[in-house]
Amino acid sequence: MYRSHHCGQLRTSNINEEVTLSGWVQKSRDKGFVIWIDLRDRYGITQLIFDAERTPEAMVTLAKSLGREFVIQVTGTVIERTSKNPNLETGDIEILVSKLTVLNTAKVPPFTIEDQTDGGEELRMKYRYLDIRRNPVKNNLIFRHKVTQEVRSYLSSQEFIEVETPYLIKSTPEGARDFVVPSRMNEGEFYALPQSPQTFKQLLMVGGMDKYFQIVKCFRDEDLRADRQPEFTQIDCEMAFVDQEDILTIFEGLTRHLIKSIHGKEITSFPRMTYDDALRTYGNDKPDIRFGMKFGELNAVAQHKDFGVFNSAELVVGIAVPGGNSFTRKEIDGIITWLKRPQIDALGMIYSRCNEDGTYKSSVDKFYDQDDLGKWAEVTGAQSGDLVCVLSGPTDKVRTQLSALRMELAERLGLRDPKEFAPLWVTDFPLLEWDEDSKRYHAMHHPFTAPKPDQIKLLDTDPGAVKANAYDLVLNGNEIGGGSIRIHDKATQALMFDHLGFTPEEAKEQFGFLMNAFEYGAPPHGGLAFGLDRLVAILGGQETIRDFIAFPKNNSGRDVMIDAPSAIDETQLNELHLKVDLK
Ligand code: ASP
Image (cartoon, rainbow, N blue to C red; front, side):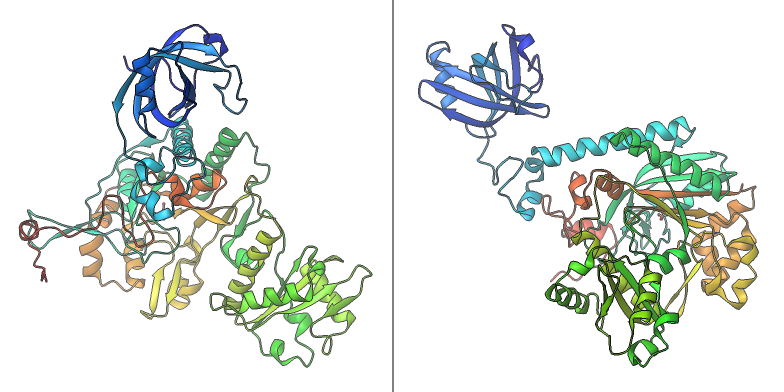
């Protein structure tokens, strides 16, 4: 028996018991006649004491030889501590050791195994197994487990069934590149790793499974953006005989359940907003609604004067920054510099101060009088003490810029409280999206999303205007889930492929299996998928998904611990029929 208790367990009620513990040496303090060792395992830390009077001499000598992270087993008696440590759950007791066994030695770790470590990111990734010993990482993994347990329990209670789908498949278009796997047995042929189980879950609906979910790895070969992982986890779901309302209700329920079971908080409001409204009001399709600063469109009240910049702009739009009138001139200049950085690329910013006495002072007083500025305040909802910030230019660009400014200022003003949860459905996404590079329409969600039935006829005349029963779940300004009602008949699916620029042959070659299945009684169906990594990070009050993944890849898609990807030898290449010019 390696242990009778774990290192977070013993209390004063255990005093005088003989116990056995196993774990890692966190640290030791050698005072000559007495040695204290902090013994650590997953559950906590327990203090061990060896002293010259009460501990066998050989054990004392052995204790003196222990280094950090040695793996040891001890047997001893639980005694009351003379100086207690209120910061430790086991802080009232210690173990007077009678027997010490070294189970394994350890090299000095390359960084300290402490909550605040001295190890840099890259080093910690290389020795991730040591990083996992640290509380912050360990606790995140335990937290993730708790979230997935709650997901499984909720969905199971709603009669969802977890079904595994294959990883070696044919391409599923979710808008990224596929990772491909060469087939040894079929020369010149390749599998693709799933970008999502999309087609399989639809086939499960044709198979009558009715309610499916899966906590599943997905693989997307994208140019890495900050905090993206080439492999990530989805909570993937699909339901048959449902309309959009049924789906939103179920997954609103899941979201409420998670926030309640993890944080004990009731979500009081779960609003919905159309995609068009989200863009108009917040400048993007995943608004953070924990705070206001809604957009006010100012064209009507700002384009009648001699200010050429505004007159020539497609959109003039502003936000009221709460308390922003207290910003100094220097602070406002700082904001303008921030806006002009290449990442945001704004030409400048016009502002109007809303003074406490009800007057206004703007950066364009030459063109606008108090009445005009009063209207700006009215449209943006500014109160006295606020600062109205105004940008102008081409609609899409300006919305993106002002949205970035809104988030930045909210961050600076401390309005993004990680302990507050504000979920939101964004609905009625466009079906198609114009791609300038390829000069054609792409599916905004994926090609299996159904157009709104009454808008199918628009596909021929104004494809960009067609809306879909497609929705995203947004939490605190992050898209954490998205899905749609699907096409479930062959003719509409063929029409869709046609509009996406597939020839009938190409459509058949790639998705014939799905279209065939639609001919055998496919029920109406729809679903969605949550990004588990991000969901867990946000529920954990953090933004970085990597901190919630046991073995993540770095920003260049590498696993620096196992050194992957890496070259393979020539025999293997030959077996796979891959001819590579090895230099
Ligand atoms: N397969 C979709 C995705 O990965 C989710 C869905 O439509 O259910 O985004």
